[in-house]
Length: 424
Image 1: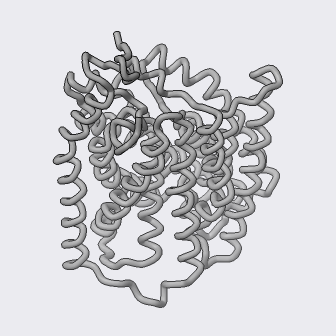
Image 2: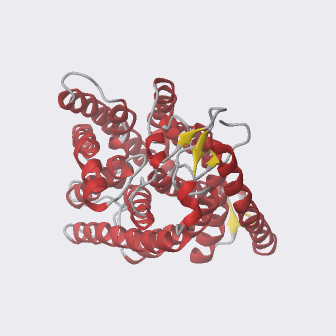
């Protein structure tokens, strides 16, 4: 059992929290430093030897604006959304920045190797942002439990698996429709993170109680929610800035779907809680429409259909938080810190399944590769392939990277004091 010493410090395994956290941080310092340094050196050498700037003909200021919008989503939106953890605010925002940088630079190299295009453009940087978004979704399932070293290794590994699924499977072998990343980003990131969390095992530490929120941490998390909500349409329409009709469909459909999921989240939350709202539901499920609409956003489906997608996704998301999360923890020992299954996993399945039918609405769109009927089959296969690829690669990565020595049993989870100077 843990106790408190005469100075007020928590005693863990015979040591105070400060002694325990100093030990583990110093033990991992050399390895973490090597991972960060080696990544910078390797990427720098590869960029120097193989890469050059792309032509100015493919550059536009509008693409930089899209880059900026997405980066706000990554660093501020995702970062602050995860600050609901009362004792892990620095880790949520700080490690989000580290992991984003590591994953983006690796993705620039990996996707170029897969596509054979060795040039840096705003398009390739935006694609690297998509890869980082996928990683941050997975991070949400593991945040507070995986160490910075482990998450850095996962950031590198997932950049490879994400690119293989996106370039070779979804857009390569199947040539499926997924303009806003419902399959390649949200579905892959969610199931990769969930599989890795399952490999990590159940949460059995006494510090599990640190996985809680305060009024202040919930407010900071709402800041992340609002930033994600505002910039989500730019994320979905990022690749369509040169085609007015497609861009308009992406933006309007995403906005309508977000409005739908917001209304659904507030309604279902108060319905389940006897008139009161659960902050977790509103922080997350209001965004579910943006997740679900991505696969079909540039189709001329109609604003009413887009709204309906959001209504379904938002409802499914809240129900997931209320019923699914406790069930997965109790029956399977699967601990999902941020509930990525509910925000990204289930809504992405809604979006993937809806794409099977919605490609029939606008079956003659010039960006669809296959005709009526066959395109629907392709969408279904892409959904199944993505879930399989993410689950297998996530479990294998988690099984290898997230193996902890027995000494880790004394290290508190969800605790900034373990990794940040001056935190108590």
